[in-house]
Length: 84
Picture 1 (tube, rainbow, N blue to C red):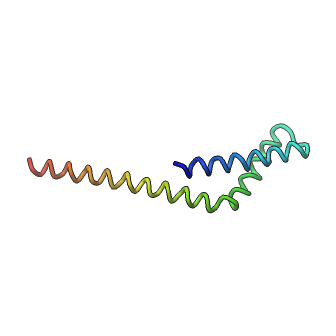
Picture 2: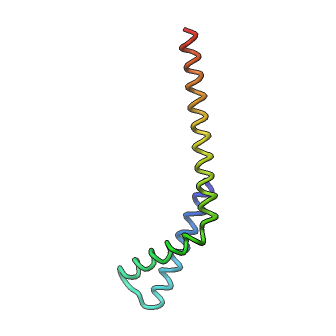
Picture 3: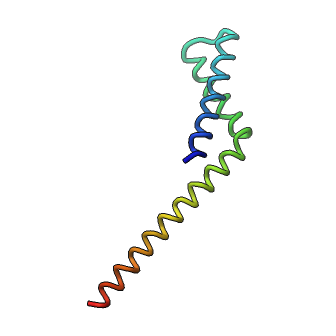
């Protein structure tokens, strides 16, 4: 969960930096938002690649733990059914 917060915080920080820079150079309104989101998306694609990889591996490992718990519970249930 920590990786989710770190990645999200960094994405918001990059977006805020581009919105601030756009505002300072004179962009306003929808153009400011469009340029801010576009530029921050492109930059974060490269800058946050390592953080995104860490996030995806933590999500994958969490899903593997859930799958193991489900398989274990199903195995226990099958044993109970077979005993009866």
